[in-house]
Amino acid sequence: MILSLSLSVRVNRSVNSLNAVEKGSDVMLTRDLLWRSIAKETHRLTQEKEKIHCTVCGREINQEEYEDYEGMCWECWDDQLTEESDSMFGDLM
Image 1 (cartoon, one colour):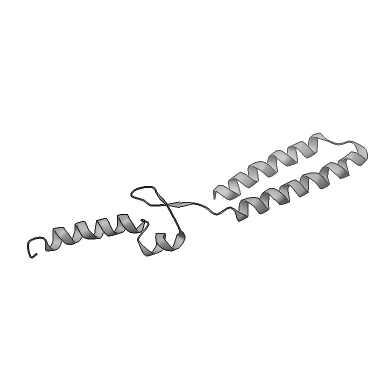
Image 2 (cartoon, rainbow, N blue to C red):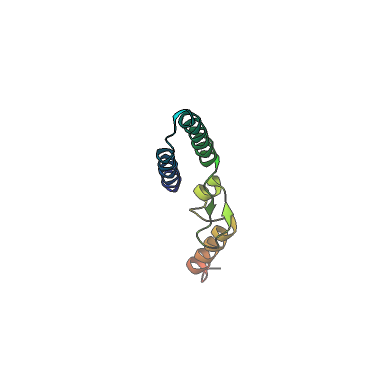
């Protein structure tokens, strides 16, 4: 969502800049440079990975960790599991 919004804002600005420059042969050169610039920016934005953070402590985690530990880093997930176990089985231990 952020990627497409950012890209559309940049494309709209670029198109507005393009419309402002209408001078014979310079137009073709400007359009070519503009579209190359848009292509580079699009490539850069698609290559940039969205950063994922632990929902408890905010530490940056990878996609696998996010999926395996319910949106948390391993340490926060382990702490939560330990707390739940203590509250469930505290009297038995």
